[in-house]
Length: 161
Image (cartoon, rainbow, N blue to C red; front, side):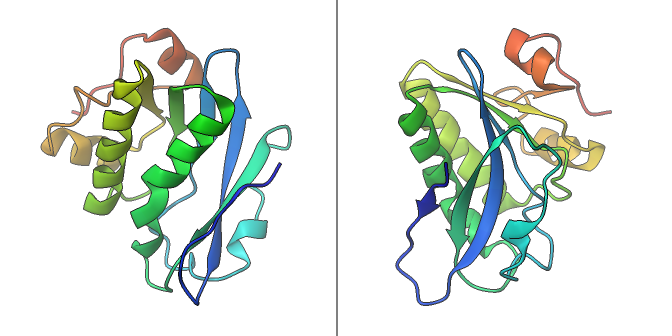
C-alpha cells in the first residue's frame, strides 16, 4: 500500500517511511530527516532496512534540508486515521539531528494523539537527539525508549546524561 500526501507545490520530492501495524500500535521508522540529499528524487527508492513492512511516501517541497518536515505531523496523522489507531511508536534510529521544526511537528502530533486518548512514543534516539529533547524539556512528554518493545510496554525510558 502506498500513500502519497498531495502538496500544492510545483516541485515535489518523495520521502519514504516504513510503516508496520501491530495489534494496537502503528510503528513508523523515520529516515534521517535532516540529511542534505533528501531533495533528491532517488531517496524514496532506498531500502530502509526491513522488507516485511509496508511503505508509504510523503512528498516534500523544496530542495533544502528541513523543508519537508513541515508536513510530517499531517502525514503521520493521516496514517493513524487510515489505520483507525491512535497509538504510534516512531522508530528514530536513523534521525541524526532533532531540529526545532521536527520537535514542533512532534508536539503538534502529540496534541492530536492525546485528544483521541492515544499515545506517541519515541524509540532509538541518538544521545545527541535525546539531549536536544531534554534541553527543550520535551523528554517527559515524549520519552525515548530503547526499542519498540519497551515503547509498547512503557518500560523505563532512557534519559540523557
